[in-house]
Image 1 (cartoon, rainbow, N blue to C red):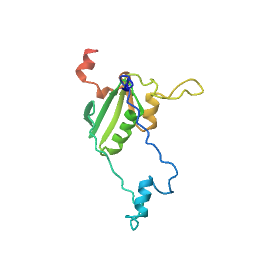
Image 2: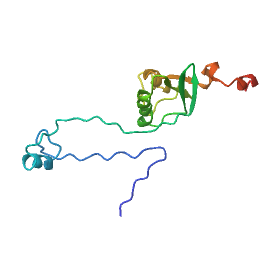
Image 3: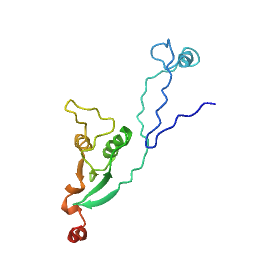
Image 4: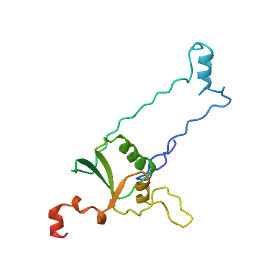
Length: 158
């Protein structure tokens, strides 16, 4: 009876690497594919057509507000956990209509990115650096524009 390895909470299970067949003919993914193309499917073209496809997903922004005719999707992030999570936002941004903008509100903009390598100066790439490099506007709670903050909240001085 094999025991499944424990997966720590907050981590994704590693993808199982597909085994590679040995001594394959060039241009084929498997021996079976070669056998098919050499026999019953010999008059078919092989690996000549590429088809782009998209996997549909739905994104729910944390906060939404229309400002000056532009819909701002404000994503409040404590931190990114892994590469698939932060890469997701790049794809979301590419699919947004022109009058939409995805903006980050970081609890700690200087927090290091997950799996970031240490630089020669000892620092790691921060959430703020990542966002800027990908063309995202970002703020911390202290740097939010005044016009984005609720008037009643500002007047109470909370």
